[in-house]
Amino acid sequence: MSEATERTPVDVAVGVLIERDAAGNEGRFLLTSRPEGKVYAGYWEFPGGKLEAGESVHQALARELHEELGITIGESHAWRKLVMDYPHARVRLHFCKVFDWQGEFQMREQQTMAWEQLPVQSQPVLPGTIPVLEWFAQERHHAGPTHHG
Ligand SMILES: Nc1nc2c([nH]c(=O)n2[C@@H]2O[C@H](COP(=O)(O)OP(=O)(O)OP(=O)(O)O)[C@@H](O)[C@H]2O)c(=O)[nH]1
Image (tube, rainbow, N blue to C red; front, side, top):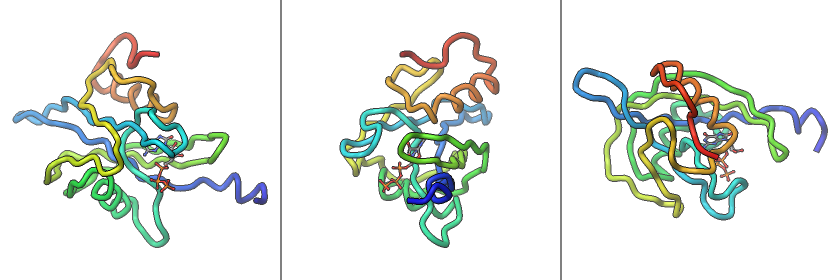
């Protein structure tokens, strides 16, 4: 692979599913563990995956969440973007908040899911997930650690 190809970031749509109370206050958020056989297997992250050719971020997110979790999402709200350099890849993560979804959660890739609050109890957390927990800490005026380990 040429250096240019290696350094071109791969776009990844990431869903931050958040529960809201009747007043619209944001509460718990969903983390899933990466399945066996993938890089960083067992690490906790927000569900999502790479955009396929011609897809928008929302389309990729809707497809991935359906494939991985069996749910159908309504609107997604673009939140933040982050480029991460891993030994195996350079990725541009498009984090989207999602408040509306339908269907029962099914772990179609033998992952595990957890509804979390700060500080996150599940561990280890994927490096690309830690900044998101810091954004949550700012929004929610949370002091202290955001996760363990
Ligand atoms: N889904 C997800 N991926 C993340 C997050 N943070 C982060 O750095 N990543 C990285 O983004 C990339 C997403 O790829 P993936 O392997 O989950 O996507 P995919 O299902 O399309 O992959 P595939 O090629 O195995 O089918 C991985 O390199 C992963 O390490 C996150 O919070 N969620």
